[in-house]
Image 1 (cartoon, one colour):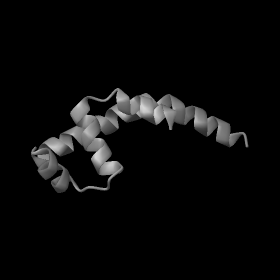
Image 2 (spheres, rainbow, N blue to C red):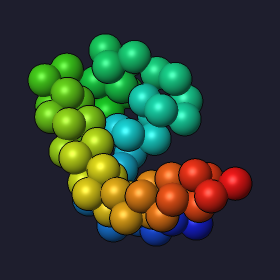
Image 3 (cartoon, rainbow, N blue to C red):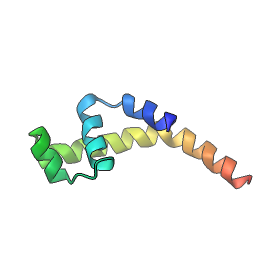
Image 4 (cartoon, one colour):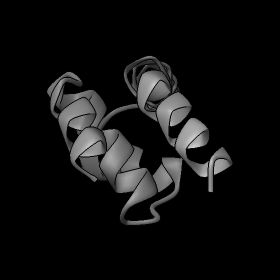
Amino acid sequence: NEQLSNALRELPEQCRTVFQLSRFEDMKYKEIAEKLDISIKTVENHMGKALKLLRTKLVDFLLLLLILLSKL
């Protein structure tokens, strides 16, 4: 959780907001676009950017987790 929280804090504000609304509040892209008064395409772009940045930030953590789990 701490790794994810740190990675989320590093996202640009609007990108983080879009990601949180989508993943944590289960809102659809159209709902997010209406709530934030942005286009659906902008929501898609923010989600793509957020997922790419989170993957980059969390890859080391995920590799370590896989190594630890494989030793159990």
